[in-house]
Length: 242
Image 1: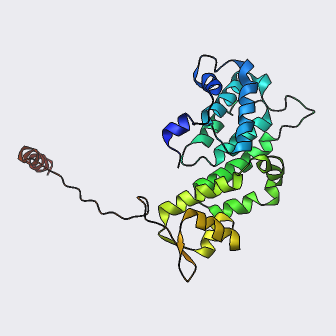
Image 2 (image 1 turned 30 degrees about the vertical axis):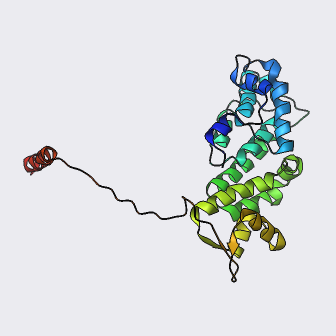
Image 3 (image 1 turned 135 degrees about the horizontal axis):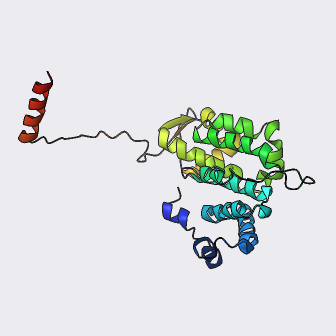
């Protein structure tokens, strides 16, 4: 899981991008092409920089003529697997005034794909992983897969990392069949993936999740100290209300 400090300032962020994101030049529309190139670097390299991508959306808000729907869709795809951070909702909040149909010769794909991407995000947040894969692999999402996520290196593995976070937090043991539907992997692919996680498997095909702070039940003892003057006030108040 990425730390909050690494989220705010990824170690892969260059000094140039840092100046564009945090400096006085962040609202300069002349810099949008640099930030867009940086986004496509993230798409190709599995790196991720939410604040830099939000800066693009903010520039689009202030400068509607710069709007590029393909860039917006790629930003949303990267934000889709940012759990547990609220990146996706932050991005959506900057799209309320997005321009539509500025160029009739090039139809805007965002109005069609935005409900689909939002549905995928909701399914991930709700931990409805089999439903996520069913929708993602459906004919309805064919355009998204063929034109966008196919270019996003490691997208499906990023989704699986979200799944692993949830399984780590909720399970001590999970059957191979169930995990297969969560990860959309089976056979040797599932075995290799789980091996890299370091999980053990028993003879019945049940995977054992290593103990961690989230999947261990720890009893908590709460001790309250009530002083005599406080108790006297409570009794007096109770007597007055009878």
